[in-house]
Length: 264
Image (cartoon, rainbow, N blue to C red; front, side):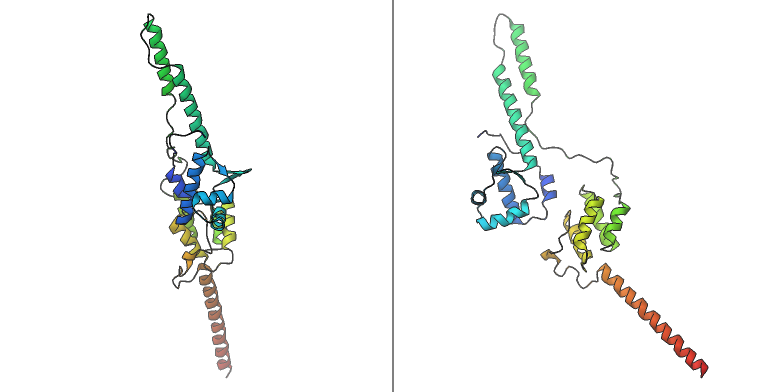
């Protein structure tokens, strides 16, 4: 098994993608990544072996595995992770090149042809200088997105407004933009499907906004008491319609009574 000098960890990307995981799931995921790194970038797809590596029972690991499947790549009989696999291959290639350059030349030795020795040593140093150790990738700024106000697509807003109130929808769309994950019409439709028929759709969206979640979790335990007695957007609309109809009926009765009195 070849060894890598260190395992780069891109914490900004990791935390942005895993805010919905529990502490136990974080621990299992990080231990699994470390095991992959020590085993040439992947581990066998064996529930028994991986449960032992992570210090979990097999049934518990099977449940957590399903939660982590969105981050993992199942390649035949192996489990890996796309970014880790790419980093592993790049690191091994750089190690191999550095090793080859080290075998080709070192410090120039004294000889009758000092200029030739100096030239060889200089070329060797240049070769090594072009192969730096792997470093964390810098964050890329999206120059196409306004820094002052998020661009909200009308189509995305309209899709989500069918199931939730405008304030909750705007807040969620702006949050997605702030974490550099702007919504598409496709993602809006998927989220709208999850919220369809939910009386607490506003609370579900607000919960995801507060936690910087990319999607929604209608069955989250954190929703218990999330409304604090407040009506949802749909409930408010129903109440308004009921009040309007009641008012119209009251006016009709009042007019009818007035006409009867007039005839008398």
